[in-house]
Image 1 (spheres, rainbow, N blue to C red):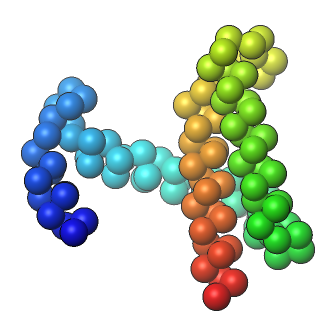
Image 2 (spheres, helix red, strand yellow):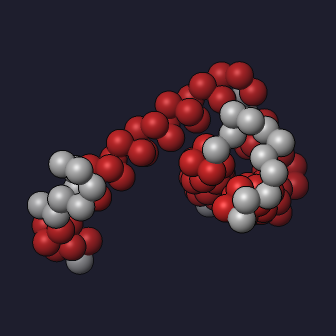
Length: 107
């Protein structure tokens, strides 16, 4: 089913000269690079906390990012000058992927 959808939508050019599929691939590549850099800097602190506290530790981090995104989206004063809503959403996406990784390890 997924392959049919991809085939039907692969040629759509919605954003500049790129398809949504191409943009998705680029964003995922950027997320991977951010994950690699942060994992080098912080080690596996997310995984360690997940193993100690369970899924609630991941949900809490994602909720913090959702609250931050809501603040940025509603124009609340941005106390962190270099953090954009894009950065916050990218962090949220990585937290979701990291949670899926930990859940995979739980199997």
